[in-house]
Image (tube, rainbow, N blue to C red; front, top):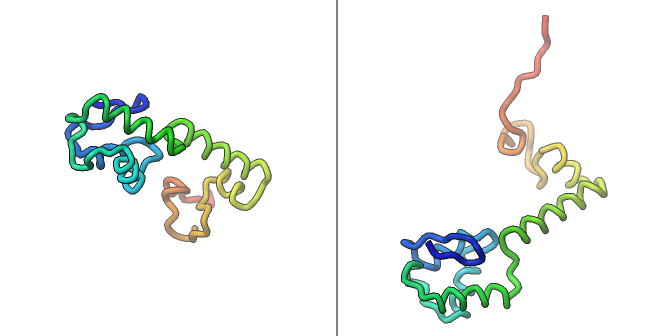
Length: 122
């Protein structure tokens, strides 16, 4: 497997489809990176030369694209800030409820977790 910034990306896929395996790079960003690096998007990742991998890595750093651990840390810091100032979004994050105005009477199971019935005991 090819490695870019310590992340292994699959060899058998096209490089355009392999780059989104890196956290923080989506399909559109991958296309832009390959265009700037001058690498053909249809080439398989296993067929890339070491020079091409270095070129892709240099484009990612020169563009200032935040990836992997740095991006996760940045997002975590933003969430902590919201919780610290006790804003509405921060409170919703703290209590594990949907943050962006979704209904919670029904659904919202992804955020709320498994359904637990709260009832009266005899």
